[in-house]
Amino acid sequence: MNSFWEEVLVFCQTLTNTIGQQLMKDFGQIEASRKSDGSLVTQADRWADQEIQQAIAQQFPDHGILTEETEHILPPQEFCWVVDPIDGTTNFTRGLPIWGISLGLLYRGIPVFGFVHFPPIQQTYHGYWFADSGLTGPSGAYLNGKPIQTSPDEPSLNHIFNLCARSTDVFQNPFPCKVRMIGVSSYSSALVACGASLGGVEATPKIWDIAAVWVIVQGAGGAFIPLEPQPVFPLQVGEDYGKRSFPSLVVSRQALVEQFLPLVQFIGDRVF
Picture: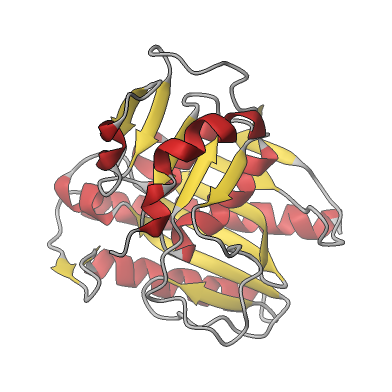
């Protein structure tokens, strides 16, 4: 099985480097259109989506694919890739250098491997989280090939917590950390995984926003908490995930859930 994980890692490294080099040529130089859900899309998103799908089909013909731009229904294969060709399209179109290519690998509907590459800042995160899947292999989370861990610190006004654009109502109560708004769901969670921030909340992420970093955060020692009663995983074969959001809290360790959850729990109860 270790040879399989080595193949998966090398595949992701090679593919995202190639895709990222081409996307950098379009970075800040391309027009976007608005999709029905209000998010932006460009021809670069669609190009990258197709290139990634073709590469997966060639390298792993027995694997399924779920992508932001085209394939929204979970296929029946045991292994399935969840693809966000450009996480942070608004940043990408406006010339802001935080956006990435996100690849998560599901096994029977549960993420077990995550890989996110941020071309403008040359940061690449990957991780493994097998839990009770029955799979074996590497463990942990990594930034540019080096192991990372979440922060052991207690919250203070000298520590960072990340918000999304739809979660600013947290300011209705005193908040125990400095707040930052990154604008890219995967990078917000990656900052928790590497210890730069203590937590983050996302009000309306789709499955391709969270599948990869769900693994990376937990592989680094953090906790990924759904803000809805039902669990996120396993995903269900045949279900359409194109319009479903997964409001989520990410924290650097389980012990902080008790402190942060009451401040953001209302987000899961809202209808967007």
